[in-house]
Image 1 (cartoon, rainbow, N blue to C red):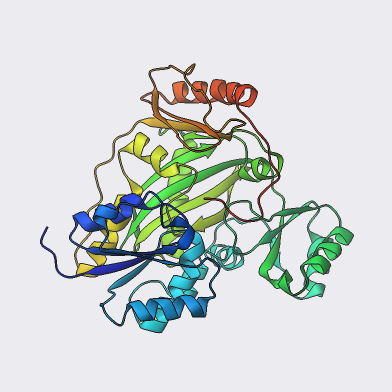
Image 2: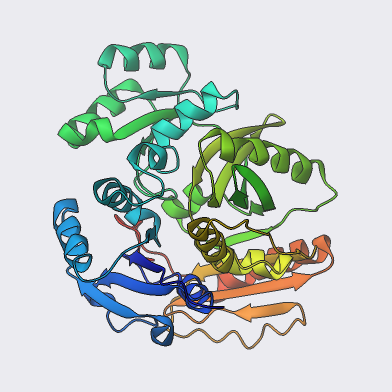
Length: 399
């Protein structure tokens, strides 16, 4: 494809998004990568990059702004991309400061701030677990009188289950808020709704969901984060009521929160026969979910994200790819050994073996949803006995 001089500055605090960068280059866009010093030697597609610039970790937003505007003195920056969820807010601030098209701070909040997204989803008519902001103490007292314990005290801007505390009675909340001090307004409290957790990963174009795939976690991510164990997720049977209902909920949800174009990773819980909205992010899902989606549908979300961003920048119409209808599942755990021996797993459905330090992981693919479920149940038990290591929950994400 002929180049038109477009340049995307991609900011990445974690080592991911390689296929996004490759796709940009293949489309004739110049990818400029800004990452942290410790990732200078990472597995980046250097052949696809116009340039890679590194900066110290933990810079303030103002320092990052100074770095980016310095880069902008000698080259035109047409678009800014936050490769990871933890870069979204600073990139939104940069867009507004530099007047570059894309989601600004208010728009990003509906896909990053758990309080903002819950309020918007509830106002749009979606079922949401009952919640309260952590601000006025009288509101908290009224909430605890009205909503039975247990409750979850959640950070508003962390990913997955990081930093969530289970609260059993009011005194426990007041102690937790005392520990948080001035940080307490960065949390919300929500009723604990036990149930099965699903995730829907989708592509949004011109305010409409043009592709989505529904998967179900084995154990809830909150339980795994706090108690440890083996992570699994698998494609939901496409003929099931769960697939149909979640596809429809997600079709209405992503645009209702303001998404115009991009990718989303949404999570929902089924309790008492109803689906509750939990959260949504404007990014590709982690934990090898992009690989899972590609195995089950043939759609690479990282590459499609790049394609839709470039189409928007060029004023072109994005055409979603044709998707196949297979089933995939993944099993993953922290391993006691640096390079665990998974050679005893020999089923022909194994499509990908995860090679990551102190991790064991496999992804499987089949045309039969039941076969995928059977394999994951077997593998989860075997991983638990052969490989599983346990560590305290991290304070910050590690990938």
